[in-house]
Image 1 (cartoon, rainbow, N blue to C red):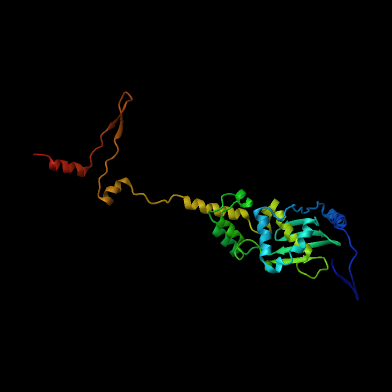
Image 2 (image 1 turned 90 degrees about the vertical axis):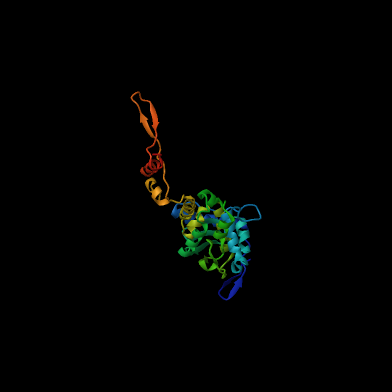
Length: 277
């Protein structure tokens, strides 16, 4: 239960059930969204032990839990996520906007720095020629080398804590309050259904990754071209004599026949010198 302060005295608010909090929050959210004329996009958590189910969703959650300063606060949000308190979550370029039902309707904003261009180029370089299709990329059907490149803690695509700016309208002083934690996990669930949103969030173009990768594969399989020596120079270069192909001769009746090739001048000279006199 949260602790609140008002002036010179402190108090604990009266208990309100989760269902009532969600009902109140939904009404407040409907009024807010009425102005923008859009429907709420709630997060529905699966009834499983794992929060996310696909590669991109799992990798997102695993990346958050990799960092100690986030991991020890994230469990506070799992209960909020699982009971359906994340009433709205929208991902745009480098930003997550969400509303979470609590004692009031709280607004959570998560800003994520754009992926550095040098880091993006390193990822492309490591994945060149190793990604078969966009479908395979979004499904996470990739080789271990590619998966390692994408999820590398320092040089991969997933954000580090210093790249996150977290904000919640609740009175909790912690940077990662339970509402923020619920939204962070909610992003993983959203990526299960829309993995393409990850690239929007990191402000990079997955098509560029795919195009560069497949172009590298095509380049590696392209036959190596070379200069071709003309037939009339082979004898001069290699000291050999080549017989030309028999010429095709057509008679008056339309019948074709092969005419023996005319011997080269040097071959004819040798035959004349060796003939008996």
